[in-house]
Image (cartoon, rainbow, N blue to C red; front, side):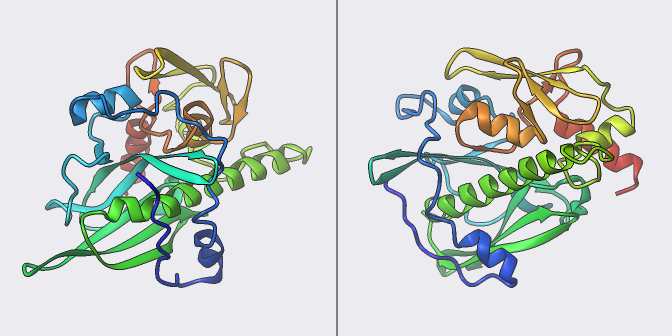
Length: 284
């Protein structure tokens, strides 16, 4: 489907405005392996085809667009946004997300790079919603976009902004890691705001050298990533990334939240589940 480049309402901060302004600048070379998903029958099959977490909702191609949030949920975590380019024409291939349980968003310190959407239905007489998009960055949730009175095509309207924000957040994390690595007195991923893998290592929930698997049916490849002692994620081909999302985005060819797709080889637990364990230890 052609992309609708509708512009969201003005965000609250200049930094957020800089992010949202790139909504139509998704990198054209991010081709999606197996991008033709029209032949896949059913949401579960498409989720497995893309290697997404089992609780993921596929918002595009639309099976049933949510026009509100289920009870006991606070937001939708954006898991993946796939956009391809054919010349000057951009095509949306995938939008997927998972519901976050709870009455309020969790503290952002362990969720750097996570992008969420809050959905507020208008009333029973209008089939429309208001939307707010928030990014976890440097220990805080930042408002990066808002849309009013959208109908059931809202995932298509949000997709360019979501893909750009996720891509920019990943790029910033990778650039910061390279900068820190150049400083001889600084660990490449020092500090709490680089995806949280180093925090899992500090808590001994993950050990250096442990391997994590991302299995995707769409190209028949089992991606293996290894956790380095400094918290970096190392792929089988030697590429090194600061965050799981950076690694997943590089492997998948489109914007990905890597916390849910990588599962520990030894016990099958996703990185997101280990991050939840750390939150519980901290009493969050």
